Length: 365
Image (cartoon, rainbow, N blue to C red; front, side, top):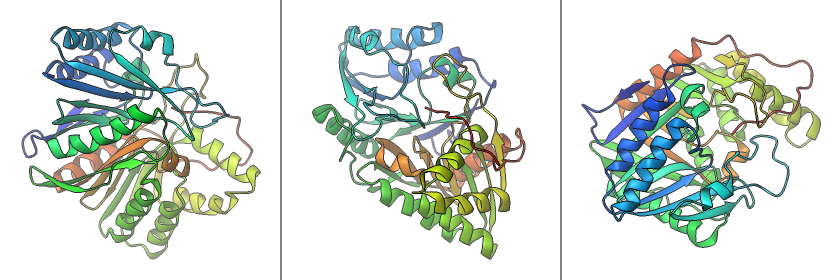
C-alpha cells in the first residue's frame, strides 16, 4: 500500500493496493479516519459493502460514531439487476443488512445497468473514490486504487450525482457535467456515467491518441470501441510506449462473448492487436462464484503522458451504461505515480494471452 501526492499535492492523495500487499485492517483504519473527520454529512454510494468482518466492523463503528455526533449519513447501494449480467455479477451486499442500520439508506435498482460507484462525500468538501469496494477481498487480494480529493467544487459534482440517484432510485440519466476545477495546481474534472459515458470513452481515446511519451492502462477488461480503435492506431504508428495490465480470466470471457454474439465480433481483432502489439500482462484470477475468493485485477487507470483517468470505470462499453465515476487529473506527479504503479503490477504477472477456445462464463464486480 502506497500513498502519493501529499507533499506536492496535499489535496489529492493516492493509495494503491496489490494482491497480498496490505491487510484489510490497514485499509479499514484509513477509511475510518476519513469518515471520522465528518462534522456535518456523509453521503456514501457503494456498489459492494460488507460490515460483517472485523475490518468492516471498524468502518461501521466510524459510521455509527458519526451518527452519534449528529452527522447526517445517507447510503446508496446497488440492488440486484432483474436480468442476467455475466460481467460483472451483482454484489453480495445483503439489503436486509444495510436496511437494518440506523442511517438513511436507499437501494438503487440496476436500471438499465449497475450502480457501480464506490465513493463518499464528506461535509461537501472532500471525496473518497476509486475502484475499491468495501470488502476484505477488495482490500487484500485485488489490485485497486483509492483517491481522496479535498475540494468543495469536486465534492459538489459528486453531491449532485448522489442526489440524482437518491431522488430517483434509478441509474439511468444520472451524472453531473464534467467541469474542470483547479485543485492545488492540478486540473481535475469529475466524469459520471451513464449521462456522460460515451463522451468519457471518447475523452480517454482522445488523450491516448495525443500521447507522445507513454500510455499506461490497468483495467479488468478493455472493450470500449473508441479506446480500442485509438490504441490500435497508436500502436500501428508507433507514437509512444504503450503498456498495461488486464484480468486474463475476464478477458477470456470477453473474447468468448464477442465470438458468439455476432454483435461485437468486429472488436476481436482490435483487442487482439492491443494485447499482442503492446506490453500487456494478464492476471489469471479465480473464476467468479458467490463463494470464491475474489482476487481480480480490479484497478481502473489510464495514464496518457501527464493526464490520468482513475475511478470505478472499466473502460468498457458496459461501463458507459453503469453509474460510474472517473477523475481526470492533469498533473505530472499524479501521472508518474500511477504509471509506476501500473508498471509494478504489470511486472508481477505473465504476458496476457488470447484464448483459442471458448471460455466458461465468469464474472467480476
